[in-house]
Structure formats: C-alpha cells, structure tokens
Image (cartoon, rainbow, N blue to C red):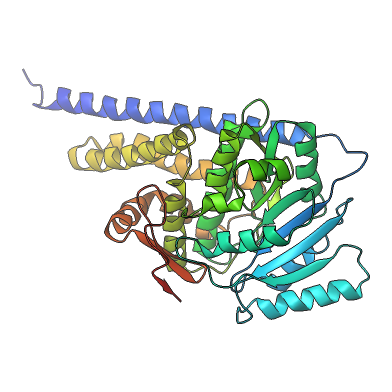
Length: 409
C-alpha cells in the first residue's frame, strides 16, 4: 500500500543503465591502459645500429598539392641516410600542380653538392584496373637501382632517423620482408576537421597497431605512409603489380608479404604527417575513404577494438536518450559520463602518440567519427565509389576496383 506503481521497474531500468555503462567504462579503462603500455614498450625498444647500411631507393608518388609541400620535398631530400640513397618523385604528367615544386627541390638538392641522387620521373596515366598511386609505385620501382625499395606518401615529412630505423628493423629480423613507420600528427589543427583527421591517424590506427603487434613487432598488413621492402620479398609477391585491381596498396601488399612467408615489422621511430586546413566536407570524404580502405585487408582481430568502442558509444547514447524519456533523471548521468570518457580516451591517446594539442573549442570533434558512421555507411552503400587523388574509383565490398577509374577530375 502506498507504493507508487512502476517504481520497481524504473529502479530496475536505472540499475541496468548504470551496470551497462560501468561495464563499458571498465573496458575502456583497460583498453586505454593497454595502449599506453604498448606505446611505452615502443619508446623503450629500438634496433641496434649497423656497421654499414645497404642501398635504398625511396619512391615518393605525388599527386596534386600538399600542405607545406616545399618543406616536405626538402625534408625528403635531407634524410642523411648513412648508406647509398636515391630518391624518385613520381608524377603522372608535367601538368600536375606539384611538378614544378619537385623539380625546384631536386635542382636545389643538386646545387648543394649532396651525394644522394634524386630525380623526377613521369609514369603516365594509369591503365584500367589500377589506381594512380599504385601506377606511380610500379613506375618508380622499375627505375629503382638499390637493394631495398621504399615508398613514402607525399604529405609526410621524414626526419633523419625514420629510414635508418626501418632498415635497422629489417636487418635485425631475417624473416622481415617489409617494415613500416608509425606516424604522428604534429601540425596544430586550424579547423575541427583537422582534429578528426589527426585522431583517426594517431588514436584510432597507430595506437591500435601498437597494441596488436606480435612478439616480433609484426602485423599481417602494412601502413603505407613510409614502408620499406627487401628486394627478395618484393619479388616473392610478384612486385607492386600484384596489387593491380586493389583500391589500397599497403594493406594488400602486407598481406601478400605474410603469405610469402615473411613478416611486416613496425618501426619504433614515428614519421610526421603534415596536414591542416581541412574543411568538414573533406573530412567526411576522408573518413569514408579510410573506411573503404579498411575493407581491403584489415583482419578481424584489428577491427574488433573499433567495434567495441563503437558499441560503447552508441550504447551510451541510446541509454542516455532512454533515461531522459523514461527516467529517473539521475540515470542519465552514467551513460553521459561514458560518452565523455570515450572522447577523452581518444584525445589523450592522440596527445600521447605525438599529436599536436587540440584547442578546447575543437574538442567536440573527438566524438564526430562515431556520429558520422551512419551517414557515411549509408553513402557507401548508395554510392560505392570514391574520389581520390584526381581519380574516381568504383569498388566492390572487398575494396577491389570493379571497373577502370570512372572519370578523371
């Protein structure tokens, strides 16, 4: 008598909300601590120096203009690698906006009496069923004359340690067929979209790679901002040409390296990626493109942490809305706190893994990748094609090219 009808049900509901939120929060704390420990291991490890260093050809496919392109080009020519080094900048044609800057950088390099040769070469338009980037990589490999072949993205700014470190990791592991550098995002963000770009690279990808490394610092795929191949491993997989028909080169090539009996080893020295000034629409397209890339070779074990974080975010959002509608009002607090912790988790990982500080006015962008998953996913189903580096590609569910590039921009 006197008991308000429905109170026991509401109490049960509030307790369920609290328990579910607490369970996801505990898992989040565990995941965060695991990522931090993985980073500390990387910082404490490092391969030994070599008495002599093998020759390397660094191939840098370029398409269009990058942020601070001139500085990136100069850094690519000033790596001070302690062995023989040649650098090839590869463009499709002379009309590319970045072509004059690359030529100027090479001429400046030659005037400095540097001992390492550098050239600009042209690949021509890619044939049907091949992306422009893979086409440039193939053209560069055909010109490479060194023992090791490296590929690096045009928006990277390598310092004087990253290539040395990757070669040292390859030399330290006879079973390593390829090595690749983790990346960092040191450029201060100018827009909210810059924060989204940086968090996805550092907190989503690099932190997760560190956590998933095997005992030999190996992964079943490559991350291609800077990757180095042994010649014999490249021959064993059929060269870069084996990636014909693929949307993304690095993940597929890494899977082929493993299939050929080698390992992909992640280096211990980070590569800076220079990127800022992105508009929100460009971030939407970037996030969409990376999700397409992820369908082209990332194993389920690597995807699982993303799925858990996504479930945690949407469970918190759903529980918070339900608590607002059904009450009691205090039951809103646990899921809201969980959502806050999800964003703080990624912001802190971003900083720990070398990312630039995020202004408080842009911090909301840490939650945006999850909120965009639904519209991005719908757009991927409705329009299974993407624009990338001057071409538009139509892809199937496995991120393979269904047809030739549908048009050129």
